[in-house]
Picture 1: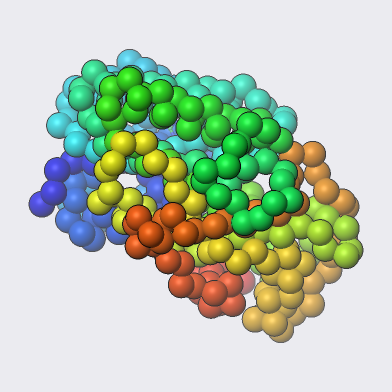
Picture 2: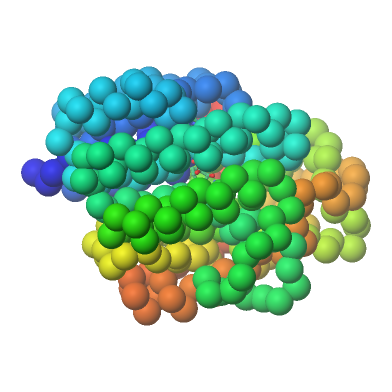
Length: 321
Ligand SMILES: NC(=O)c1ccc[n+]([C@@H]2O[C@H](COP(=O)([O-])OP(=O)(O)OC[C@H]3O[C@@H](n4cnc5c(N)ncnc54)[C@H](O)[C@@H]3O)[C@@H](O)[C@H]2O)c1
């Protein structure tokens, strides 16, 4: 049995998969999540149900922006590492409700870092995002490039989170791995994300509101959940000061071609209404994974076709379609 890991965002998409892998490997996990209803919270309860069958898992419904209740948790347990995945996610919603992003992603991150300082917990993983690269044409995205032009409030708060991590690492010798995830999809995937919306609308014969023009300008480096979890697990064995790693497949797909793959796999034709690019969206995301490969041994193996086949199988079962 390994020492205790505090994992935030445990009921979420990436958090629940990360917990599951860690629990299977006998780690002690304290999971926290505020179970907010940004998307259907039935899915979060379903995610938690998978985790609560493990004896080495304990769950607390807590909000990371609540410093005092976090403090009592830090007092109660002998935590050795923190995997900080909780965040208000979503680019579009950040334009509607910017304050919640500041509260969860900036204040919440600061609370955790400050409590880690007080309890001398020096090993932390922070979930960052490809969105910090902004809207740039130069691809693939490399960790060493300047990132100073986030084009959504979500991206700005993720960048602020990275900056806070750097500062704590600099001041207090923390080891912090900031992992920039690239469009993650797979079983239990977030209902607000394009892969979910595409699949749901195709299976239910509804029209996809497609945030692009018919020629297809938007491309994403779609990355299967199991590959992301492999990356998180590898980063748990690498503690060398402050580091940023891209975790992505490294091969962007035009989203229009992503839809074509779902059509092939389902045998159904998508109905698409093209409504153009939305404010805050970037044209392309494309991970250069050389650093993650060299230092962590990370390599994403799951092709979009294979990943989507697995996602569809889960999707049809869960949503009864
Ligand atoms: N899914 C992706 O493609 C993607 C891409 C880049 C970065 N990320 C980052 O990865 C992390 C996990 O993303 P996800 O896709 O699993 O999202 P998710 O929304 O499924 O999971 C986040 C979890 O955090 C919880 N949460 C939100 N605010 C909280 C708060 N104030 N206190 C406690 N819990 C709170 C939510 O209830 C949710 O269960 C996030 O930090 C996200 O920004 C995800």
